[in-house]
Length: 125
Image 1 (cartoon, rainbow, N blue to C red):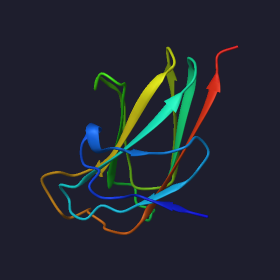
Image 2 (cartoon, rainbow, N blue to C red):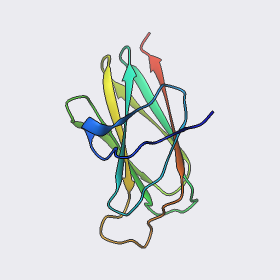
Image 3 (tube, rainbow, N blue to C red):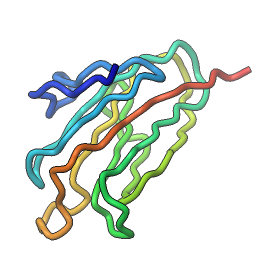
Image 4 (cartoon, one colour):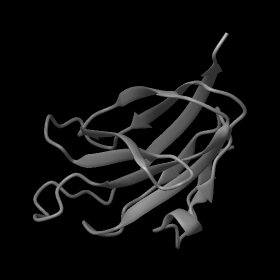
């Protein structure tokens, strides 16, 4: 069963909760829309988020950002194709992933097609 994002999820406070390993399907409604997801990890380690893009472009169609529970930006990636990103996290916490259009000043690369986000965590040994 596939999970779908629930609007409004355009701030950290309104982020959709996602379970580790459970894919969630989302869709940007405009080039200024941002979708936030929150995922809880029980220890430090590596947090991986896999992004299944609806496009296979070399341009920056999507911007993916990882924040800690205080809202501090930890890492940011831009992509137009399927990719996985791994970021070391220091401790148990709730982390936030934002999915946005990679181009804020132009709708040239914007797509409203659905994407799929899946998270996983490997604890430090």
